[in-house]
Length: 338
Ligand code: P6P
Image (cartoon, rainbow, N blue to C red; front, side):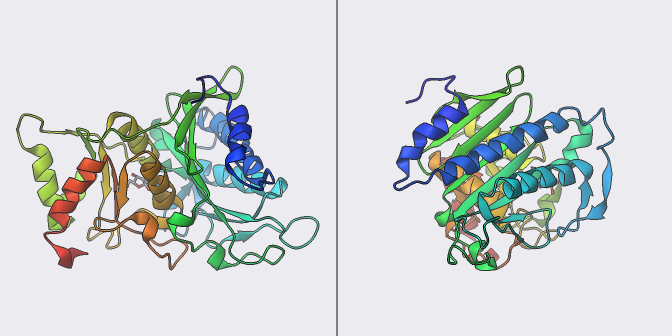
């Protein structure tokens, strides 16, 4: 067990020994994400002061108006990955297609690809509510030295090498896993260093918080409606508390620490759900399972879903094991809703 106040840099180097024959590429990649996070954090923290509020001119592939900070964060992460020549390709929520990153010495000799939501929950920026970056890292499946292909990105979540998020909240934290548990690092603004503040993070087995946008209640599957009724019953351990920030990273981070469940189900407005499989649900699901929680589409593990499209959406149920099991018991009463 690491001592608190270990720096992220020291931690990455020490964890490197978990990877046989490591070339240090993954360490350099996580270090580059750390650098980009500091740069984005600097801008997020002064968003109210400079002309990066309000809507950029573009509409992204999601059909959402791009907030200027979305575009800025995307550019920072893209530039960092490109300039440091550590990955052969990046897929981003803000980019219609994946971006190939050709190494300077010809061909694409890097073995990792990154999928990223550079600033999730960005509609909260103008009202000073916390937002986050989510990232997912895979080994490429096509031969090293050839241009990266779509199949390098359309991999099941079980194949992830690493995943994590940065939460730009009351403090800025980087939380990640390489498949050996989940660890959280808090940025010291005075020094600009991330320190280990939350070693070996684990979901409590149960909790009393549920996170869902109940505005869409009338459109939810019956199993979700039944579960919400269960949450709101007046019993010895209920009603639970409803806590929904509208920022996945923030709701997830709180629920992982306190215990809870986050649900974004199908609805008439989002017939396949709203959250994107590859750069929101898979990385959060990897962290969840590493922290002894459960992450499903209401029926099966998120990490087992075979991707078919870069920006595909899935229903998302994620959190404390007993709470996800309970909502499943309701969902399984309506298999036709699957
Ligand atoms: P709604 C932000 O756009 C996001 O992807 C998640 O961060 C958040 O939990 C969800 O969508 C909010 O969606 O429909 O409730 O506004």
